Image (cartoon, rainbow, N blue to C red; front, side, top):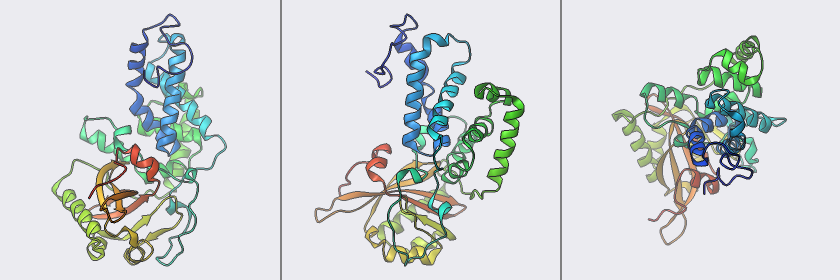
Amino acid sequence: MSDLAAAKGASPTEAGGAPAQAVELRLEQYRSELTGYCYRMLGSAFEAEDAVQDTMVRAWRAFDRFEGRAALRSWLYRIATNVCLDMLGGRERRARPIDLSPASTAATPVGAPLPEATWIGPIPDGRVLPEGGDPAELAAMRETVRLAFIAALQHLAPRQRAVLILREVLAWRASEVAELLETSVASVNSALQRARATLASNDVAATDARRPMDDTQRALLARYVDAFERYDLDSLTALLHEDATLSMPPLELWLRGHEDIRGWLLGTGCGCRGSRLVPVAANGCWAFGQYRPSGPDGAFEPWALQVVEVSGDRVAGLTSFLDTERLFPLFGLPPVLDS
């Protein structure tokens, strides 16, 4: 039995409505796009999945009262929006280390990790992006799940955030958004204008979304993996932009530029020497599960989920998420890597 079918309360069939399996199939076809919407709203893959599951359960329980009075997709987005607004009520925004403090140096003490709720988290592309489809549309969708864009969205008030995502990312009409939020078109347009102004005041760094790998990108990533696994820091830093950044949530510390990144990797971060990288895709970017040597038996243990942001022919940002206990299963990465 699926998680949805196992939800408490009467099923559509028990309530005399459509067959349960048919209802579940109709709801499940929207799971991926709803996850993308909730992730943009909440900034956490795990919270997004919780929000979507709550949405599905509410829709399942209320399906017999739905009766096609509105489009199913619009109805589900209304439920998902209300779930997200409830979850966002009264809490601090999520952020990236780069948004919270000035850059550190290679000599800066690590400091204590901050709570998970502080940070924007990564999400697998496969959870939020459709399979196949028009390459240009996919590239545009990847842009809207980049870490910098998700972080910028968190500066918006929750209802403004919903308006901007629905209007600018999902291309809903103002009248559709007004109906969903039970407000006026004028109010939606005003909220969108304020949201655009807020985003414009926050510098959203330009990086390249992941695309079908061409020869240039294939060569860059192959050189990155080779340099990192050999721990050749001359070759590694040669692949970075001069102002490239390295951050490591849940640590607040972050670094900018060749000298400090190199100094960190040779000093406090020297335990990364000998690591192996397993490719995945996260937030519209190329990413890697990083495994460090774990002992004399030659095995490697999870250490970080690296999101590699590329701009042109160089790496612009490296974000190493250290919560491997939850992130590696999310990305389908094995718990141990054999030699």
